[in-house]
Length: 175
Image (cartoon, rainbow, N blue to C red; front, top):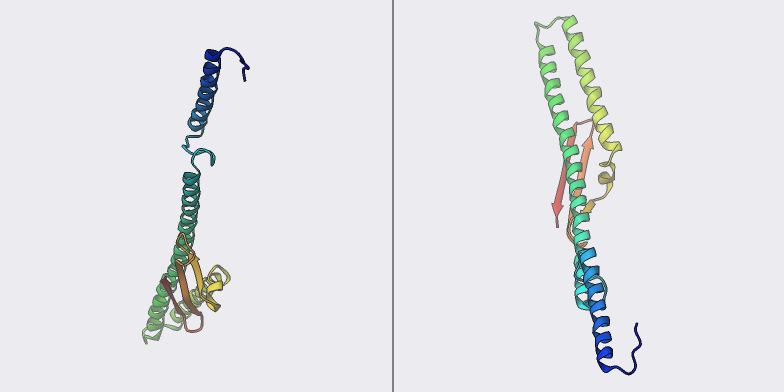
């Protein structure tokens, strides 16, 4: 800072120069960051609002990720259910074909090999589902927060998978 003691015009000019330097520095800071508010001195209330909104945006982004995880889990379970259903239908066709009196013993053996392979595949799918993410859902309800606040959740109440009876069901709710 320049020190001028006696010249009043020079003092006024020096004060104006200092003021302009501060304004220029603030303008350069805003231009370089692309933000109107860079610190609490710019606008304390605006900074508080901006911080709260940034926090809400981050919460919503995480909620979107959680919702996508829940959707993926349901799609995985649904895909497994569809595949098991298709296999069960094929197993029914094989059983009906094997029950026909026109089917020879050799043909029945071939049908039985396919039937057993389908049974093994169903067991493999159920084991994969049970050992994966869905295992957590078998005992307790499982919730995915899907809102900026914790009270908005996508929750699974039950997932039932029984290999012996080939039953696969789940229920969910959004609160």
